[in-house]
Image (cartoon, rainbow, N blue to C red; front, top):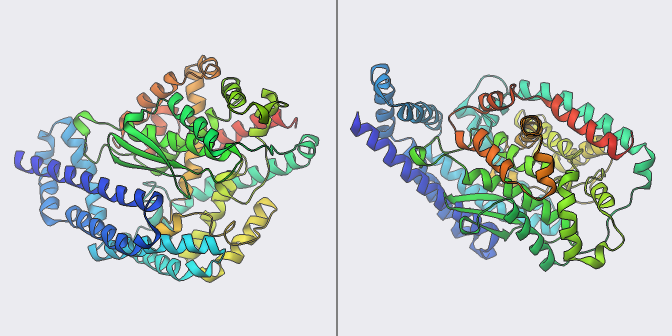
Length: 502
C-alpha cells in the first residue's frame, strides 16, 4: 500500500501547485493584465484547467484510491490516511463524471466572458455580454447532465459549492427568511427614525481610504508577509499557496465604507485560507473548506457581526476621525454607528446594508433556478432582474450596469454560488451567538480593537478542521445545530429594533 499512498500524496501536491498557477492567472487578469491579453490568457487558463482535470480523472489515480479504499486495506490505514482517502475517493468519483474537454471549454469560455462582461458594464449594455452568458448557461446545463443528482438540475450546481445542499432545503430556509426580511424592512421604512435619517456625504481620499484598509487588516492579524491587498473591479480573495493569499478592494467610491467593508470581508476569507490545516494535511484534499457557505461565514462574520457592531466603532471611530478630522468634525460615534448600519434599499449587492443584503442574493437564487429549468431565457434577464428588484426592494435599476451586470460571478460560470452568501450569513450569526455565549468578555475586547481571541476561537472551531467534516457536521459540532435562519432573523430584530426604535 505504501506505493499507492506515496502516489496519491504526490498527485495531490501537484494538483495543489496547478491550483496556485490557475489562481495566479486569474488574479492577474482581474488586477494588472492589459485588456488585450484576454485571448492568450484564455488559452493559458484552459490549458492549466485541462491538465489539472486530466490528473484528477486519471485511471492510475483512481485505481490507487480504490485499492486503498478497499475495506481490508482501509482498515490498516492511519487516521490521517483514512481521512484523505475517503475524501479523495468522493471528490474523484464526482470529477470523473466530467470530461476534460468540457473543463477546457468552460475555462476558455469564462475567461473570454469576463472581458465581455467588463465591456458590457462600461457600455451599460447587457447585449454585449448576452451571447457569452448564453454559452455559459448552456455549459452549466451540460455540467448538470454529467453530475445528474436527483431533483432539479440546480441541485447539481449547488452541490459543487455546498455539499449535500438541495433546492428544497434552501427554499425552506430562504422562503422563511424572505418574508421576514421584507416585513422588517417595511416596518423600518414606516418609522420616524427612517424618515429623518440622512446619508453621510463627506468624501475621503483614496490615499486615506488605503490607510484605513491597511490598518484594519493589520488589526485582524492578517500577516503582511503572507498576504497583499490590491484593487479590482469586484473585490475578491484568492490563494496561490499556503503563504500567498491575495485580497482586493475597490476605491472607486469616495465614500470610505465601500473599500473598508470589502477589505474586512475579504480579510475574513484570507484568515480562513491562512488557517487551513497544514502539517500532516498540507497539500491534500483535507486542507480546504468543506463548503463555500462556511467560507462566506468567515467573511460575513468579520464584516457584519464584528465590523458593524457598536463595540467595534468605539475603537475604530476615533481612527477614522483622526485620519480625516474635517469630514468628521460634526459627527459623534453614536451618529456614525447609526450611519454605518443605516437601512436604505440600494441596487448594488456589495453595497447593500446588512438587512437587505440577503434579498439581493435570494433574487439571484430565484433567477438561476428559472434559467436552469428553462422557465426564462438569457435575453429576458434585464427585465426580470428589474422586476424582482422592485418587488423585493422597492427600487428599479436605471441601467444594466447597476442591475443585471453588477456581479462578475456569472461570467466565471459560478452558477449555484450565490446562495452560499446567505448560507454563510446565517452561519455567521450562529457562530457569533456561540462565540459570545462561550466568551462574554469578547465585547470588551472588540471595544479595544483586540481581535486575537476571536481569531483564535475561529481557528480552533472552524479553520483547523478543513474538510474533515461536511459544513453541516462542522456547524452542528460548533453551534449545536445545523443551518438555522431563525438565529439570523433574531439577531436582526434585536439589532434594528434598537437602531430604529421599533
